[in-house]
Image (cartoon, rainbow, N blue to C red; front, top):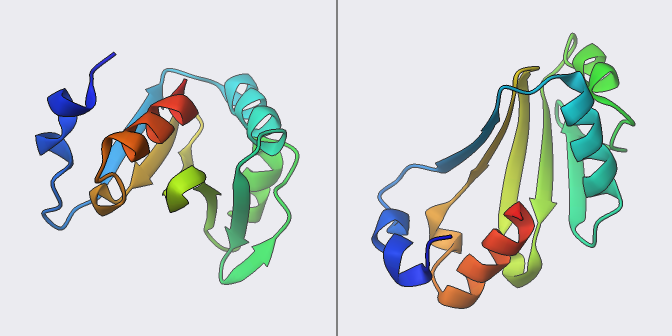
Amino acid sequence: MKEWRDVKKELEPEGSLRDIYIEDIDESVWDLFLHNIRGSVYELKFTHGQNLVSLPENFNEIRHLQESDPTTLGIVLENGICINCHFFVESEIELDLSPREIDSESKFKSLVSFLS
């Protein structure tokens, strides 16, 4: 695992978000992710269109919601870091975050802890 000093320059804000991908997955991995995130200590904000709604039980329910409006899951970590989870395709989990939010070693450690 990289240390803060190794990634600090990569997280310097320049206007774009940083993406994190978990690739080559299927619906069962999505469902496991949703189950684990629901049982976590993190604050969750699931939106469907402009509405804040309850996080669905599984990826199939989210896919159904997306037929009418986009969905996004906001995950708030300690230190106020917000990670957005997008449900674009079944084969990958896509997360993004603003590098402005990862501006210290403690915040980097919070991100690494979440990813672990």
